[in-house]
Image (cartoon, helix red, strand yellow):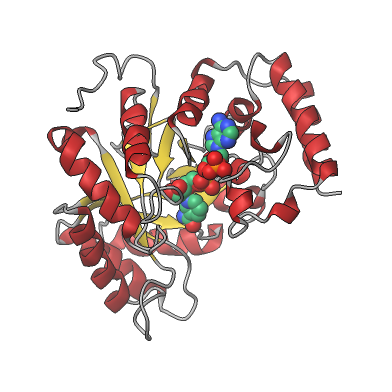
Length: 333
Ligand SMILES: NC(=O)c1ccc[n+]([C@@H]2O[C@H](COP(=O)([O-])OP(=O)(O)OC[C@H]3O[C@@H](n4cnc5c(N)ncnc54)[C@H](OP(=O)(O)O)[C@@H]3O)[C@@H](O)[C@H]2O)c1
């Protein structure tokens, strides 16, 4: 059936400026790391994209290696775009990345000009697009001069294959050095993509938040639910087809009964705030104004609907934040 997007899709979702750039991103973006691969159900992934767009989610995040098979998420999304969203391309922000291992041999990962530019060309081919909105260097590569990797991002923008440049998994110090190079090149570096959630505070300690504030760059937080742990997903058992059941990126052994008890306490706290656990976890990430938006994953449309329900959440009291900090500590005890 032809897809006809919800006419009211822009009424509720807030859109925030990315740093001091002109680009705006929705409070919630959808990532296609999981559940968009060659073995996943095409109808379900299409329904997730439709649900997201209908709710005002304009930003879809990919990487060259998302699948499995690597590249298949871009292929599937390219097909969905063609079938459903082509006439809405100017309403969408589509991002991709290169950095981790994508093909065999010495030029299949890292931060060389050779790898990054070849990978972007391959991504565009799979997505069937002439350009992406944001092209990220996916991870730091200490073996390649920063000038070379940043030069490749600049080249991607200059050639019209990307509109903006982004850095992912960079620490604050390296991000600042990269930002200086990109500034000299007049390359529109606007955003950092880093892991951040109640249970993972790394970017508070490695300088990303303070550097992004100082440089007026955006932050989009990935794995805001710690891959689903910070939701109702595992409160009773490890469901079939859940990420923990797949036991690859999230290990079933991480879901201990002691941890589930802590999650139960977090859920009670969320309920007192009138939220689900997932909604509270997302609100927590968004409480710092340095964070432009959260980048969620999903395996079904209902999860996206629930998560978007955070939109009208109230702020946290000092007491709530203290309780959450104490429970985060208890989780790792
Ligand atoms: N730059 C990087 O290095 C990097 C790394 C990781 C991720 N990312 C990006 O960030 C995106 C999100 O990462 P993520 O998938 O780890 O995020 P996440 O939102 O922390 O976890 C998503 C998973 O949580 C579960 N979930 C989501 N909403 C739920 C709900 N309301 N109730 C119960 N369970 C729920 C689902 O698990 P089930 O599948 O079990 O249902 C879903 O697949 C990725 O797609 C990717 O675009 C980037």
